[in-house]
Image (cartoon, helix red, strand yellow):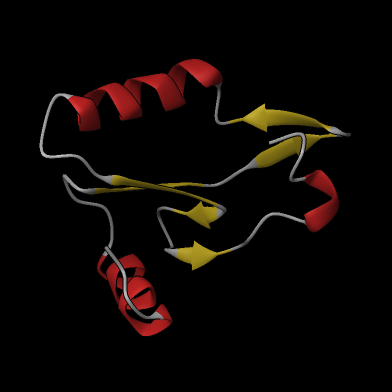
Length: 77
């Protein structure tokens, strides 16, 4: 879907639409606090019922800021 990094960053800059969902990953200690499994399931179900889509974790949706996920916490996510 995104052939180049610049394409992905431009899509993030434009914000969410029916094919793109941005989710910030929040932690409480070593555990994932959000988004919840139910929130993610709802988004994926919506994609499955439409033309598909991309769910990006580690991006704050209101400011469209790429926050990332620390490498040491990837397994928890």
